[in-house]
Image (cartoon, rainbow over all chains, first blue to last red; front, side, top):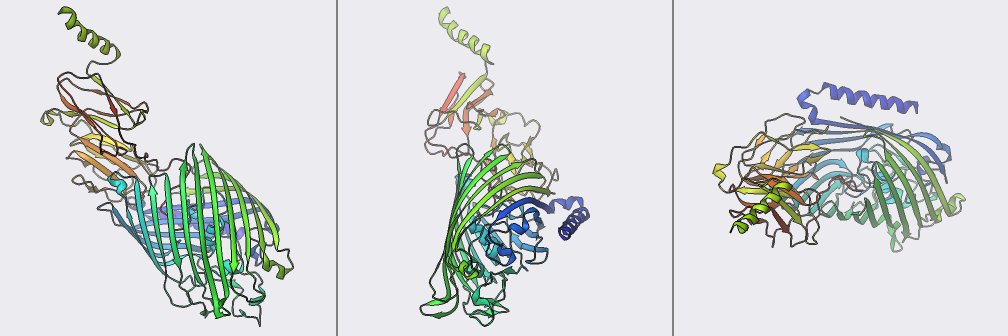
Length: 422
Length: 215
């Protein structure tokens, strides 16, 4: 905690000196948001995956009490009038990486539209266009404290390190309410993606992996010395390049006014499943994703996402790769605002199926999550939130650790969130 | 004869009790007969050459990453200022020819106003915040207003100065609609536009329970 507060002070100092050194006429070229979330946590369940075990939450009994959930600094700068730079720095008080590291860093070329068509080009490291929840500064959610299982995985293991071209047609500007968009991305790195999902399973929390993070794996039998995947480090470094192959995704969007948005994506990291480099395997991970959100009467809204895909690693034996898992998750969230108050209720349903017959590596699981959250915005700078989350899981591999394969983990969080922008 | 001449006079008297004799009350109703707010209403000048030059300037502000007002009506030739009341910078543009323009990246009052010399609709966007949408309606008129929540706008039209009363809104699909009423020598006290087609949803960025971003 002390180390963290020190880091926080460092960020504040860096931001204020950067802002102060900018010329007055240039201040508009730099925009900073810094934030800190402090929470009181009461968690029950297995020891957390962040501590190298199987718990699906970020917290466990050992972390009960006051925690600094995060501190972050978002920077958006205008290199020229149409070239933006974005940096997102996240600070965590845990042992998964250095206290201070980046979650996103990219350049975006945004030419001024000369017609109803709008073009954007991103280059760098950024989140693929998946989450409909994490729309606030620092990739936090205005709805809940913990992300859905889908977006928790996105935060854990997905980052596009490459280039994304976005073309959108906004006949809205010509009077129509419909808007269409298409994004195509080519990316490198992100080859170990899928390791954590297959070997740990789905989770629900609010921790975002930074570029240098090493995410601990549970003590799986097959990654122990002398076993099949003994070359695997006891952790996953999800954003490494392992096989020098190019991955891609294609996303299509339709938006109707500010009433409805529909997204559909196909993602394929095209990783070589037999590649191994520095303790990290390549995992061929592909999925389809659809998402929709709609404004409803009386300040109600609904958000839903559904992801279905597969991840494969190792040589092809007996009709399947040595790890050959299919994953599926979906959630529906209802949210309602009343002045500065917001209530959200979310139901997630998740599963991992398995096609391989590899012994001592049963990754099958299924379960569901209920999340209820309340948020109150005291001011632009300060908001309070409370969240109750319950995750029910049946995970066959938990038997390896002498655990009941079925269990419920619960977590209550009461959080204060500070934000400063300039 | 005396009685007949007295009827319009009496009617005029009644009108002047309620409002100015030159006032035209314009009501806009949707296909279900419900009032439509925020519709631009303007009296097109009978002789645009006789229009006095625009008085003062107009303001299209940016507040909470929204254009404020959402729809601004100005006379041809009006200087429009674009102050930025937000903490963040904006980069306002329009590709609505011939009134297209680009205001380079700015914060606060950092540049001269924009003059719109041609009548028509100027659709505004912000190149930093793709969700921002606003309109400037440039008209050959110095008599204009927007409908209130009752769908009503009142125009003070000088007798003989206006050729027509017109309405405009980005929500009107404009296929079968009659959006203009010619004015004869006799100024009507009240005009009702009853729209024939369903309206587009209003632009309500930043309102409602959803958060919209470009993620």
